[in-house]
Length: 146
Length: 146
DNA sequence: ATAATTGCAAACTGTTTGCAGCACG
DNA sequence: CGTGCTGCAAACAGTTTGCAATTAT
Image (cartoon, rainbow over all chains, first blue to last red; front, side, top):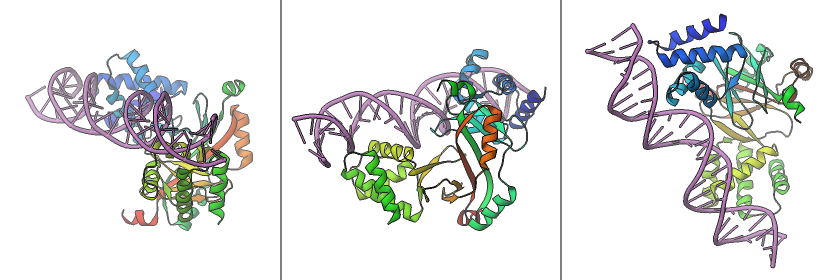
């Protein structure tokens, strides 16, 4: 399966050793990725502990950090200061649509014009390296609940 | 002065009473706004304490919260999980260009196409309410320092 | 007077770190 | 066996809360 492959590859890249916790993390991540679910670090820890009791908080945080750096995980920041992670749906460049109520996240392929970004960099004398675009709203279910 | 007016108005809107701490906050905010500086909550507290010794941490946090809700202050989230605030340069809709090294922020008028956003909302069954666009990079000074 | 606002200190949330022991290779 | 990785517990940063005292109206 494609997702499982990407997760596997990522772990081979960050780790010299294949350990029990990392196997559990890879499995859990694949599962969440297939369902397209987003999760907080603590959500992830709790889920992991069901599958692999005794796994340490620090291990989970250390793994998330590395997976974000590898761009396997995306971090989505909400306006209330919270954030969730999500396995990138596609390998390529993308942005997000996020529900402010349930924190569900959908990948989007919208973007600004590349030339426009470059022009801004030139104008403001910034070496632009990255950008984030997030649309916030309420998903169908949460919109119903007014 | 235009900025001072906006700050004053905002405070009249959130507060029934004009108090000493709020005066200090309005003054400090006007100053920061005129210089276009961005700041963390703690930066702001420290600056305030120079001008108004004894001002409480909670007061500052409570004020920031209200001013963000009033959209007088923008909150800019960085990829490393930190964030800063900034007096909105203009009253209107805008986005940001932020230096990842020194956390300087510039207002931008770029945006996505309105129709495009609406189309996404329809397609994904989201009631879209808001969006955030931030360009990250290094400002001239910080780019020099490699 | 009286109710809004304040400052303090303590509580809290989410995250990071130091370290002794475990276990992968 | 050596050292990368782990779990624990404690430390930490930033923010929020309860409350008694203060102060604007």
